[in-house]
Structures are given as structure tokens and as C-alpha cells.
Image (cartoon, rainbow, N blue to C red):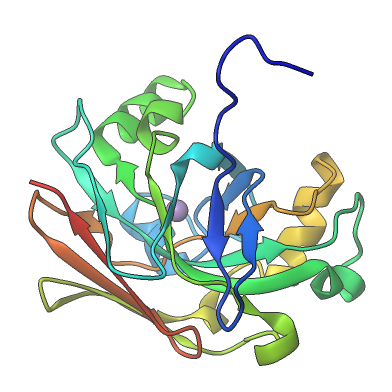
Amino acid sequence: MTYAIPVPAQRSLSIAGSAERFPVNRIFCVGRNYAAHAREMGRDPDREAPFFFMKPAQAAVDASAPATIPYPPRTKNFHHEIELVVAIGKGGADIHVESALAHVYGYAIGLDMTRRDLQLDARDKGRPWEFGKAFAQSAPIGAIHRAADIGHPEHALIALTVNGQPRQASDIDKLIWSVAESIAQLSMYEALEPGDLIMTGTPEGVNAVLPGDVMRGTIAGLGEIEVRVAH
Ligand code: MN
């Protein structure tokens, strides 16, 4: 078969301790999954059913080594959101909570970079979030650590600094919807496929970055990522 135009490159991420790469299919993101972040966004942290939005695979940036992302156009409020990322290795629909973790290939540190001004404008007008969330290079993600190697973390410090100053710090045990519950809920609406990523939501402390800023994110057991915003 020949294609009429160049075939888009397959986005992929590094795997810790392996020369193989993880092909990125779709990126699902959980909205408001830490109570303190829901409150800072002006919303009640009730345990209502989780909601999801998406980023395209083109949003993924391999941040297994220090990475640089552009300052995106049409925003004056470019926010960081550090998140636990779940890499799906085995697909399925209507996955039960009890068996959900068997679908996980591994875990990584990610940043759900957000044009907050565009997102909130869309939110308040009842419009889609794409311009705020789904732009190119909006999801720097560190090396994926295989669940076969590290298990399934339930408690772990999750933290982000900007230019060395603390911005976000919490624990993944504060997730309103756990990894297994998020997989079960999402798979009720959409069959998961190998290569899908789930960004599980950010804790409180989201804030703006400027050109030249350096973000360092950590989740205990998953190492660290360093992402610079280009000038
Ligand atoms: Mn997020």
C-alpha cells in the first residue's frame, strides 16, 4: 500500500530498563481527581462519577531525559499539572475493578500542561476543552516503569517544583478515583486499547509557568522528570 501523503509518526515513550518503546495510542485524562484541586478550581469535591477528556497522541513528549516544550500560542496563563500516568498494556471493555490492574503495563510521571485561560473560558461557556488541553506537546511524560518490575503503587509522594520552588505536593493515595476505579469507569464508555494512557488527575497547587522556567516533577518510585519551557 502507498499513502497519498506522509504517514504521521507513531508517538512513543521510553520504558525504564528496556530498549523497547511504548507506542502511544490515545491519552485519556481524569478531571478533578484530588479534592483539594477540585476546591481550588471552584468546584465541590464530591465523589460524583469521574469525567474524562482527551489529548491526541501528538501531545506526548518523551521526558525520560530533560525535555523542552514550547510556550504555546494564544495563552497568557500556561499551567502545570503533575499527574500519575497509567499505561494500558491490555485492552478491554466493561473492565471490573477487581481485574483492572491486570490491564496496566506500567506507570510514569506526566504533566497535563494546560492553557488555563482558554480552558476556563470554554468551561464557563459550556464549550469543549480542546483548545485548553489538547494542543501539541502538552503531555511531557517520563519513562514508563513496568508494573511487572515495580508493582502497582498505592501510596507515593507526588510533587512538582518550578525553578526549585515547591508548587505541588501530595500523595497518590488522595486520588478520589483510584487507578483501578478509573480504568473500570472509563472502560464502561470506551473500550480501552493497548497503548492508551490515562492521566489520573492533578493535586492542588497548579500555577503558571513562563518561558525559561524549569519544572521538576517526581513521584516516589518513578524517578523524576525535568521539563523546560522554551524561550
Ligand atoms: Mn489534569
